Image 1 (spheres, protein in one colour):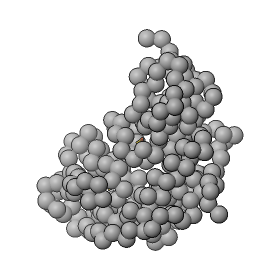
Image 2 (tube, protein in one colour):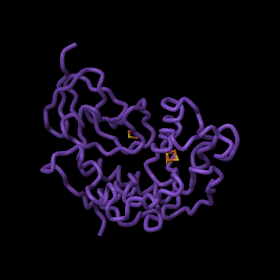
Image 3 (cartoon, helix red, strand yellow):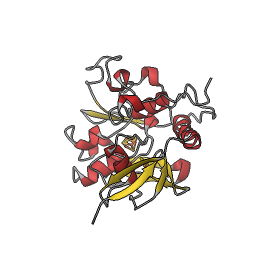
Image 4 (cartoon, helix red, strand yellow):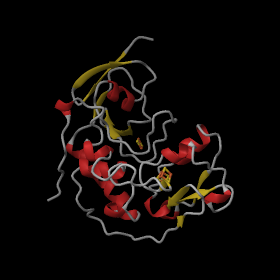
Length: 243
Ligand code: SF4
Ligand code: FES
C-alpha cells in the first residue's frame, strides 16, 4: 500500500500504513508525550498522556493507527492542560518524593512534570499507605511510586516470557501484584529480566546500583524528556499555568 499523508499541528507528514500516530510523529521529529508506551511492546493505551485530537476527537496516539488525510492536533494549550492534569493526578495518587527517590533524574514522570512546568500539583495529595517489597536479593518494588502503567507486566509477559506481575482491583483500589505469591522473592523474577528495566519511575529498582550515576548527570538532568526525538529548534519547555 502506498504512503499515507496526514497533518500534525498543521505540518504535513508522510508515513507507512500500519504505524500509530505516535510512531509517525516520532519519525518526523515530533514528540508526543507518553508514559505507558514502551518501544518493543504492543500498544497499551493505559495512561492517556499521549492524548491527541484526531479530526477533533480525542484519541490515544500510541494506539491510534494513522489514516489518510487525518488532521492531528498535538501541541495545543487544551491538550497540554489535559496532560498536565493527568501528570498531576499521578503525583497525588501515589507517594512521590523526588528529592529522595533513587530514580530522580532518570524518572519519566518527574521529567514530564518538569517539561510541562509543573512545580506542585493543584489537587490534594491522597497519601496512600503502600508496601515496599525488598524481599528479593537483587530487586525491590516500592509500590508507593507505582503509576500502574503495566510496562513491567507487559515486558515480563511478552519479552521475558514469565508473567511475574499482575493487577488486582479496580479504580483507586487497583494495584500491582506479584505472581504467584505476594512477595518478589517467591516469583520467577531475575535481576537480568528486561522487566526490571521497564519501569518509568522508581517503583522497580535494582539493589546496590542506585547512585552509580550521580544526581545531576542522569538522563533528564542533561536534556528534557522528548528532546531526543525533536530537533533542537522545536524543543520548548512548557511553563503551563504554574506560577
Ligand atoms: S512497577 Fe513501574 S513499570 Fe510496573 S506498573 Fe508500576 S510504574 Fe509501571
Ligand atoms: S502512552 Fe499512550 S496511553 Fe499511555
